Image (cartoon, rainbow, N blue to C red):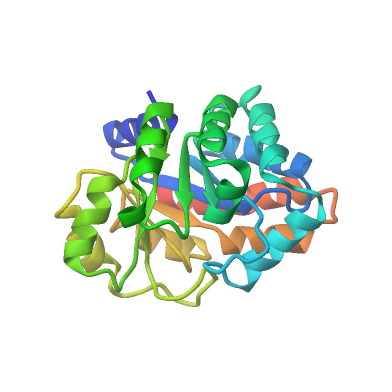
Length: 265
């Protein structure tokens, strides 16, 4: 069974919420990415999203754009991120999703990337700029490889399109809880409960809510309306602050644990 599907099934059995972490692969370097992944698994993270660095990350705010830039400067490529996943798999079975832009898949070779990702131990792809209306071949290749197709739903998505998107997705649905790009916010959206209920009317897939969650209080609040929450920029910001420190991994892991504990307890 796919690790993402298996993890969410286990969470449902335990009546527990899931916690998804996003970090930029190769920020500050790929060895740090490997070490962080192992620590995240240890402190209770359920799914790890690795952002594959790209030169034009249009869906991302400044914090994650800078992480992508640092990843590119450290020499990170899609092939090297796949190598890092292979290294993680020697010590961990944490479910891994690639957060990636279409251009990188196109340049690498669509079918080859999907095959290589599955063989490396990746569990799903979230292609930011590939809408389901244009994803027929992609979805069939992903199904054949046993990978989950993760799609986004936004606050502005009409209900008929929500129905289309969730029927095409697998693993979980990622609800972007506010308009705009990624980034930390001082407060969470007040329409999360309403929108997750609207999405849930069309699917049995778990709903993970992200974009803007930056502290334990916000994490706890959002978890009440979702099967999982996603935190990215707040963690990436910690990596930016401590990237040159020997304490990078334990400091970031301690911050992540505070968020995990808020959601799980």
